[in-house]
Structures are given as structure tokens and as C-alpha cells.
Length: 135
Length: 128
Image 1: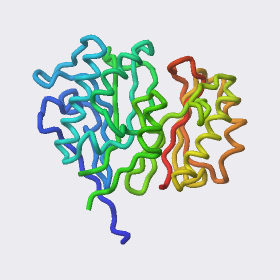
Image 2: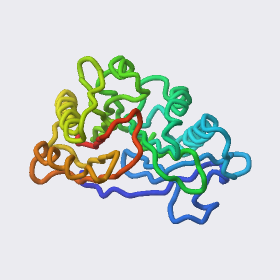
Image 3: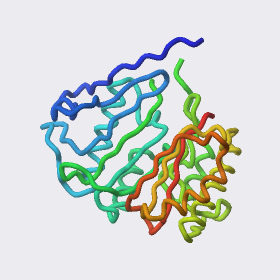
Image 4: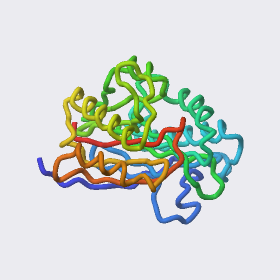
């Protein structure tokens, strides 16, 4: 008991998906602490090229959630272990389209979620972050 | 040993809400509650109104949801409030202060574009 919690950075197995390192941004892709994994906001990055992929919104959401799965699995967790999700869209009118793709990734017992719209950087159509239980 | 994940309430209730989200998920020592909008918890019908009335409905539902999950408003550690307009923040606050004990939880309030014309969304993380 009272053992001090320590934090460790999470790295994706695919280095092209380490968006913060590729873009020299002051954050890590994720942090593991205790029972939890906290991921940074993830955006649609093509896992083949590491480039932002500004395809139609459904595909942007699909790429982002696929990358989130990769990030969690790299850390020994999985989409099934996600407890909380924040979905931010650049355009509020894309909500239904986002939901449609989102359901494919969380078909049963989905995480708690909040979704809204606000300005996003780099022309991204979506940004998605999550908290998951560690493996 | 890895922490347990449990959806609250069961997924059939969540799926009835039409949202691809569970209202709350317990993971380890914490309860993660989805961004709530003003609805009738029994029927799932939306209850659009003023910022004040939506806030009151959401926090009433939140209290019920937390207590059904074995938590309570005084176990909430962090709240995020999303408003359709920051000009409405005082109207939200007037209602908000009546729900939480002293000291209240940590909180962030943001103005954002919200889906379906709702004026308020409130989510929280609480001790399970």
C-alpha cells in the first residue's frame, strides 16, 4: 500500500505514428500510470507515410481510431479496455458520420464518451483522445 | 492484476439512448461518466430548455446515475462543462452551485459547438 505511482511514456510500435516526435511537439503519445493509460489527442495520420490524411471525415475517423487501437495495443491494452473518449470535430455537422464509423470500433459496451466541435489545428477534421485501463 | 472494467448501467440501457456510448464506465477506482445532455432518464426524451433548466436536469440525472452506481456527487473529482455560449456561464453556475458540496470538484468550463442544438453538456470523473 501507498506505493508511489510512477509514470512511463507510451510509444507506438509503428514509429510513423509517433505524431509528437515526428512533429517535434511537446507531448508524448501517451502515459501509463498505475491502472491507467492516458493517450494524447490523436489525429488522422496515415500509418504508411506518417503524413496527415485529409480524406473525407468518415475515413479520417477510421484512420484515427485504427491508430488509437495500434497505440493501445502497443502498450498492452486494447480498444475493449477504453473507459473514456473525447471526440472533437472541426465541423459539428459531421457528428452523424463520425458516429457511424465510431460504432464499428466500439460495437459492445462502449466507453463513456463526450463529443463536441471546436477549432482544430493543421486542418484536421477530427481529434480523438482516450483513457484506457492498462493491460 | 489488471483493473476491472464495468459498464454502468448495462449496455442495453445505453443502446436504447441511441448513443454509441455507455452512460458511465467503472474502471479501477474511478467512474467515468459520459457527457450528459438534458433528457428524461426514464423515457430518454430530450428536454431542451434554457441553460439553467438543462443544467438542472443534467445534474439531477447525474446525481441519480452516480448513486445507482454506488458513487455520489460528493465523490466527484473532476467536471467538464461544455456550453453553447460562454455568455451563459453565470446561468449555468447559479444552478451548479446548488448541487455540489463544499469543497466542490475540480472543474473546467468551455464554450464549444454542441450537437443537436443542446445548450449544455456535463461530464465527470468520480471515485467509484
